[in-house]
Amino acid sequence: MGDYDKRTTHIRGDLADIKLAGKLFAPHYVVPQPRSCVIATATMHELPMGDARAVSQLVHGEIFAVLDISGEWAWGFGTHDDYLGYVRLSALGEETEASHVVDARAALIFAKPDIKSALLQRLPMGARLECTAMESEDANPDFLKTGKGYVHARHVSELGSTKESIIDIARKFMGAPYVWGGRSGDGLDCSGLVQMVLGMMGMDAPRDSDQQMAALGSDVPEGEALQAGDIIFFPGHVGIMTSSDNMIHANAHWMQVAEEPLADVIARFPVDVGHPVLARKRLA
Image (cartoon, rainbow, N blue to C red; front, side, top):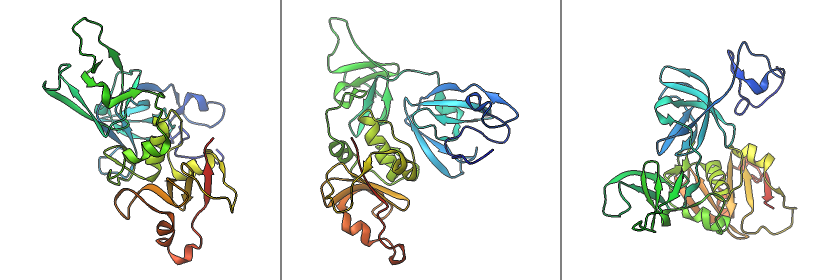
């Protein structure tokens, strides 16, 4: 069947995405069925087992294209990055079209447009919501209506409308715990941080650091000073420069999103790695 990226090519031994018909052989081809993530976060697993290795994560409001259902598990891919995995079927619901993204550390869903009303749900930064304004004369202008309750307008912004810089958004994740496969304000891994920050700016990015290195930006020539917003790639790791000398990254050393000197990050790599910076990329 040739070489292909198993993380993002929608095929397994028994079936494949219909779009691969005539390109890769499978006994059956299926049309993906889009579903929305209806819980705060849903782990995507390598295998259909709760203790299987995490490969990524869906956040509320993202679309997961289902290719197969077996028992309590759905196999498919996130439409934002084509990344494959198994998700618990209970985490998925009817497809909705998100209009807003949580751009505060977390957003609270209230039963009524009133901060003193009952809390129905907490959604982490990066979660997506379908929001509408309330039009009645007595509507509270501080709130937006969602399919699950009411969210304060200061906790969300329209998708792609942010005027904040890549650094401003990245720093909002400061202190979030390091979570392998994580992609939200409740926890991220290194490439999850880059993907989520760019996503909140309205830019699509692949899931893993090697995919990002191949797809994002243009090379910063050797000898040219780095600048805020440049993306730095290492073996199995990635971070965002906040200045010519400092970077922010989700990392297993501090077990959280931290900002520190690039020189300190380089020094932690084993001596036998040599110079660990694989690429320096600048976004348009």
